[in-house]
Length: 137
Image 1 (cartoon, rainbow, N blue to C red):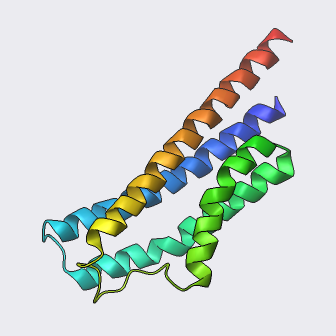
Image 2 (image 1 turned 90 degrees about the horizontal axis):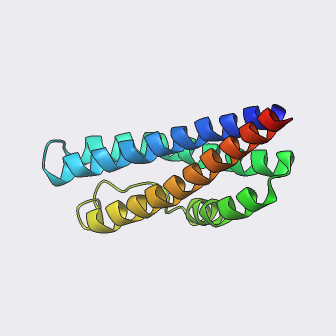
């Protein structure tokens, strides 16, 4: 029964990550359609980048601690990419370059979104698997 709670916690962490990525995509879409100015868009995006990185790191450590090695290995490339961006100081959106990099920023976040959706489905699968296993006992 404890395993179900662990998968449920990972589910909520993944939902939090999805919300942060969708929020960033909405800010970029608003900027693209000229509903918001570049300064507001970049400041809103920059406010949620570090919480996204921290949540991803917590999720990776959580999978390592609980012994879910496959899920930890699946989280590792995304965490590596975030750490690489942070160490190179490329993680924040620049106000002066946001229009030039708008297509790249959207593509990057869409890739992250697809990656997180795959992780979410795997987490849901393992949660259901554990629930069915506990039900049989």
